[in-house]
Length: 189
Image (cartoon, rainbow, N blue to C red):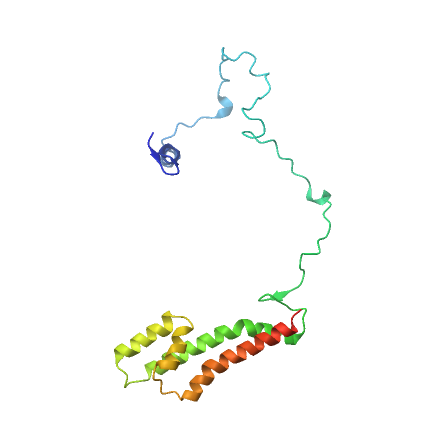
């Protein structure tokens, strides 16, 4: 039998052949209840009364599994399982300031990144004086290089947006995020 990486070809094609035979109706169907018992085997005298003797006891043939009734189990309550309700990993059992700041800390990076990308793309689309090739390259940089692309555009892209507004958009957003993260760490347990 030919060998393939991972096993024998027979292990793949044998069951496939039996499946196709069954699907096409080319299977001899019989009833096991109406079959005669197999004939005695002379080389195995007393086989029906002999105890099973596996080749490697309890390794090649695992021992029987006993399934216990779950109602009879005595399981002590564990103190390391949390029963509190959380939203985005923040416990609702904290103060409402903790929940607000924690959720804001989770959502703010997504909001900042979305704002940076959308404002940069909007700014690039409305600039008719810039050659199309330059606009497309900046759009690719903004979309393909996360975080660095939009920040690079605001720093080096000759955007008509006022410089102070661009600085506030990038540096101010990051400063607010860092401040809220520090506040959330300070209020945390």
